[in-house]
Length: 78
Ligand SMILES: [Zn+2]
Image (tube, rainbow, N blue to C red; front, side, top):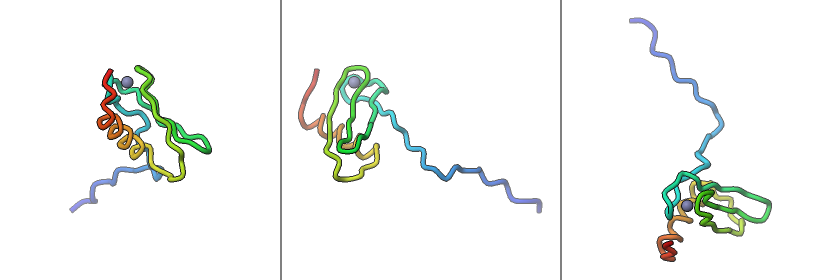
C-alpha cells in the first residue's frame, strides 16, 4: 500500500480560545486578561465583569467557567 495519510501539522502552541460567550447577554465578547496581580474577565457587550486575584494561574477557560458559575449562582440577571 501507499504511504500513510499525512499527519495534520499542528502548531505546538496551545491556541485556546480567548473570547467566550457571555452568560448574560449571549454575545461572544467575553475576554480574559491578566495583569501581574489580577485576572480580569469582562464582556465587551454588556460590561459584565469580574476580577480575580491571581494567585492561581488559571487557564482563561477555567476563569471563564468560574465566571459563568459565579454568574449563575449570584443571580445577577439584568
Ligand atoms: Zn455580556
